[in-house]
Length: 430
Image (tube, rainbow, N blue to C red; front, side, top):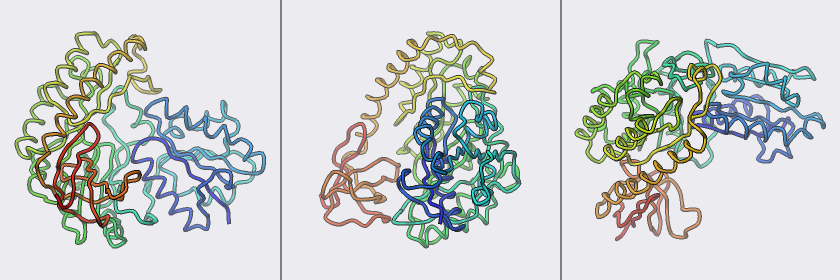
């Protein structure tokens, strides 16, 4: 029995894919191990949205060249495989197998027949989704991918080139997977897609309908989704934050910039005024909703005025949290043809400014929940604090609460007593 070690970098979808690959390999007679030194095959699944993830993944594989010398196999999977394909071998001669996301189903057979020739499995597939159910240990939360690919072609984003065109998973396949997970004790399901709101655009299905049907699956406790694109947020979805009690009052809605000029260069297909209109609608329907976002600083030609528009937007909207990125030029994107003319030092400065502003806003947004009670989904016992559990509020806030006994995977009514940047604190019997 060949032993496989899997290392994952990148987004939630990469981690979900790795769990699916694990189930696929186990079904086909492989053993998954937790230490690379004990493996015959090392699999690295990585993101390519930012160069930093690429560098870390390739550095990790490079550090295990000695495994190859002993007859082991080094495999590179994920978006980076799609981006560079066979060219990866020109620079990294220690890699044996390259496999793109559309072709994971072929991986068990490829590893079985592998001899000494390099193998590169590329190309789009009519069936890119792994059908094997996840291996459930004690998890009470799970991701479920509902789409792959994206056709929005934001000018900075490499995803359309690494994940291919939009493809929606069949609804019955999604229902079946969620039902299986719930039967195995999973209480929280987070639906994943590059843009979940486009689910069914290629098949005639509808994301709002999908949410409602999954919401009604018996035994499901909490439901969420990632990520949304502002151009595809419709009223039918917004009202579900009010009408579906199991649905987290949570929306991750990437803004990227507060400057209309930069948004147009990014090919985001909305203006800041249109974005604000969505925020106002959502908060009117669900006043306690948590809204998070992505911001890119230092996009090509971003001036101080453009940056100040973003700062004003952040102060005006008051996001619950932000993921702030310094622009990183990516191959194949239209932005890669623009001059990357904002100096690194200036990107760092803008990055620090936004993080500092968001720090204060996040504390303020968390503190508004103190003094209330809420049904918190219990995730697990706290790692470093005896007598405490970690959970998620109905607004998807991380809650650290004191309890004599709580059961992961269930809802518990918690009194929320205080808050800081990272957590809201509470107790079950205050």
